[in-house]
Length: 457
Figure 1 (cartoon, one colour):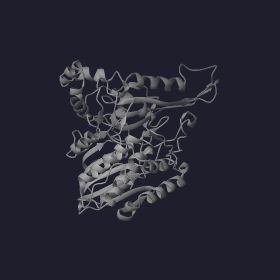
Figure 2: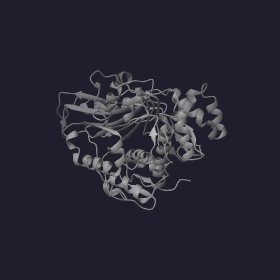
Figure 3: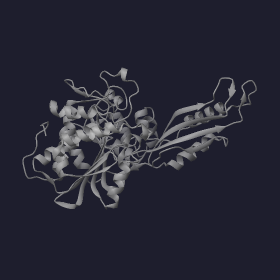
Figure 4: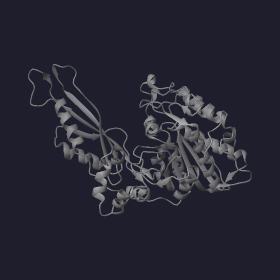
């Protein structure tokens, strides 16, 4: 049983949530003062970290190096990010999203789960390790990006390039993405710890049409708006094919023993019955994402007035790409199903290919064992993150990649990530800090007593 963090520890996270470090697509709209405020808070709250670790800044991103006794080897690259997504409707929140409210059970605010709790928990663990005289056997890097929510191109990408130029090859890369869920995996009563081995790719496809225009009283057979709508409909009605990947097969094999007998028997035949298993998984959006490159039309626009034929119309369709597919295969699929040479189809903005280790790396069991110690009785499995994280920039820099945090979330908690009423329980925050303390202990050469859970640094 994990005790909640004390108020002073919770307040350090709450103060970070009060820094409005919102990322936007336009860098000119970033609140520089908020990132400066957060930087000052981190340096004041964790003095030993900032006195004893080397720190290099990349804009507002922060790359820490904790030299080991054998500094040429690297145990881990621990990732987190400082930025958060905007809030759509603050009036719908129980507490203002950037107030950093602490009550008897939760710490409330945008970033409480994604991802300031992870950032602060790592620093809490390192600070207390330094206070105890602990030094790692091999070097540890902490990389805290400032623009993960807009794809990390000026933060994580540059920090990863620095590590790559320095020849860094770590035993473990650890980032956000997986968690422990309750009541989310259908048919599984135990909590499920999903330690992700990578993430899906990302692409947004722009469809555009140009026409002559004119008066709406004399339309042709199809307007630009009608043409673009038909193209979107064809793409949505013809999704990319279902497919069982090695990571998903491994995930299901690990879950089998926790499932009802009927499902367990079916999964035992997964190699022979993969088409049936994938069709069953495709019945729910949460599991369909594991067996298909998903298709999500998100924007459509065109025309200027109700009685004017539009000269231009466009739409955007977002794809999260399953391993085995690619950005180019997504574009080829769109052109094939649209079947209209008058519709221009091209990738728009940031795109990334899937990055995944097909099997758990050597350090996977370390993460799994710590998860079991912190939340006894969990079922540990693998998986792939459906969204994009900073870790794709570092993917080649470690023998084991894990996207995971040992926080226990239900469906409502998961919906609050990028949504309304984001919050993290005091117990979950204690779990996250303890997880990082135990992980550091795995890599450390101790020279003093072990720190206690929830104690003030």
